[in-house]
Image 1 (spheres, one colour):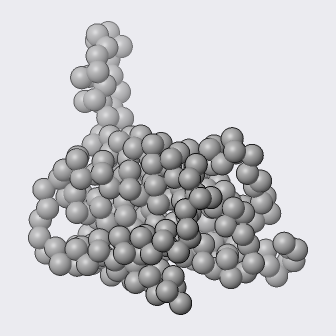
Image 2 (cartoon, rainbow, N blue to C red; image 1 turned 180 degrees about the horizontal axis):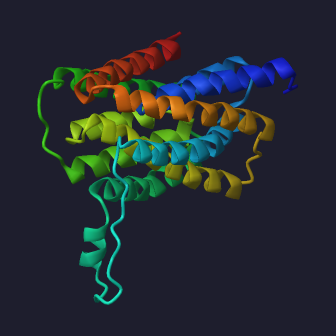
Length: 271
C-alpha cells in the first residue's frame, strides 16, 4: 500500500468518527472500520492487528476517561496495611464495575486466543454472516426489553464476553455490540456498560495483538499510527457526550445502533 498525505489524513478522520461512535455507544469501531479499510485496499491481516493496536490504546484511555467523567466507577478502595490480607478483603476493595472488567477481560483471553489461531481457516462469508445475525438478534432484544428492568447476571455476562472476544479475534469487529448489548441484557446500566466495554475491549485487543505478534504477523505501522491518532483525538468528545445523555435514552440509542450494525453486516455480506 502506497501512503500519501491524503490517505493518512483520511485514515485519521475515519478513525476519529469510528472511535467517537464507539466510545459514545460502546460499539462500532472495528465493525465500521473493517469494511472501509477493505474498500481502501488493505488486506484483512493488515487491518486486524492495526485495529488491535489502536484500540488497545484508545479503549484503555476511553475507559479511564469515562471513569473520570463519572460515567462508570473503576475505583479501588485503599486497604489498611495492618489488616490481614485475604481474597475476601481484596474483593471488597474493588468496585463492581472493575470486577466486571476483570471477568470480561479474563474470558476474552480464551475467546480471542482461540479465534486468532483459526482466523485464517474460517470462510469469511460464514464468519460475517454469523456476526451480523448475532448482533441483529441482540439489537432486537434490547429494543423489545427497552422499558423492562433486567436483573444482573454474572453467568450471562461471562457467556457474552467469550462470544464477543471470539468475534473480535476472528474479524477485528463484532465485539462492542455484543459486549455492550450483552451487558444491558445482563442488567447493567447503559453508561456503566459503555465505560466497561471501552476498558475491557482495550485489554482484549492487547491479548489479540500479542497472539498475532507471536504468529509473526506483520503490523502495518503507518496504518496503525493513523488509526491511533484519530481515535485518541475523539475520546474527550465521546466521554462528554455520554455524560450529558440520559441513561434510559442511551439504552434506546444503543439498541438502535446495535440493530443497524447487525443488519448492515448481513446486507454487506450478502451483497
